[in-house]
Image 1: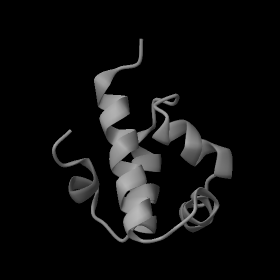
Image 2: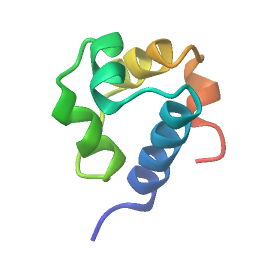
Image 3: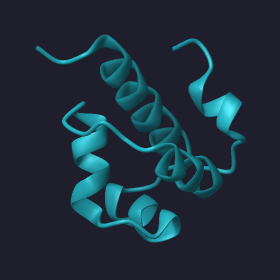
Image 4: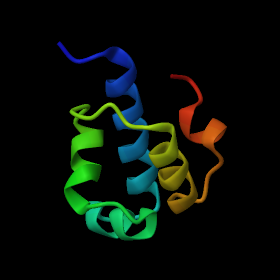
Length: 71
């Protein structure tokens, strides 16, 4: 069973990525992570590290607290 926090975070990443009109591949490039990693996060298949949360937030033009609000 997937943890609720991972599901919520994945949805939030997808929401922000879509808002910016970015593909998973484009976001991965901006965040300097592998393209499959973004899909795994959005599907709640990865327990993301704080370092990678920071990378994603920067790539999305957000601060960490903005990306993780309402989780």
